Image (cartoon, rainbow, N blue to C red):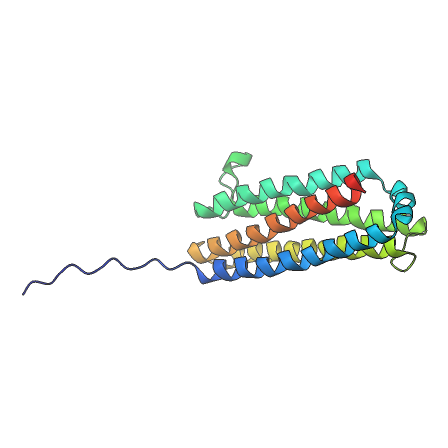
Amino acid sequence: MNYAPSAAALKRPNSVMVGTIVWLGSEVMFFAGLFAIYFTLRSTSPVLWESSTEILNVPFATVNTLILVSSSFTCQFGVFAAERMQSRATGWKPTQWGMVEWFFLTYALGAIFVGGQVWEYATLVSEGVTFSSSAYGSAFYLTTGFHGLHVTGGLIAFLFVIGRAFAVKTFAHKEATTAIVVSYYWHFVDVVWIGLFLVIYVLQ
């Protein structure tokens, strides 16, 4: 008895990736609200903004920004390694590194960025710029502080992915997918910071 060939099975999108993208969409709205708060306060207190932004250490913030942006590249190299199912290095050269090595480097760069942000906060507080000192202080710490918390969350996620790579016997598609969705989040927080840097430090 002859049967007609069955239709090709539909390839459904990965639920973890779809969920991550939807969640990042909500995060876009969250940060859009923070940008709106910043611009609203700046428009109502232009003189305060002019005097307060003079305290900012723009060269330091620029270097710190470059460190965070470079971490997006190292993160993506880790994703490339995960996609070819290479969790660890096969040699000492960066071209032979696996996901773990690239993600460790990304973690280090992200930690340096957070450390730089903490140092900047300490400097501003010593100069009298606190969360409650003025509208500018509130706007500055609210926007950059929430972003710093997101970066810290990303660092924790990297540790989870690295730990999982060591825990499993075989690095497979499931582990690679986890690495990819974490990279989505990391690229997102990097892009958000570029926007914050331009608004706070460049446009002032």
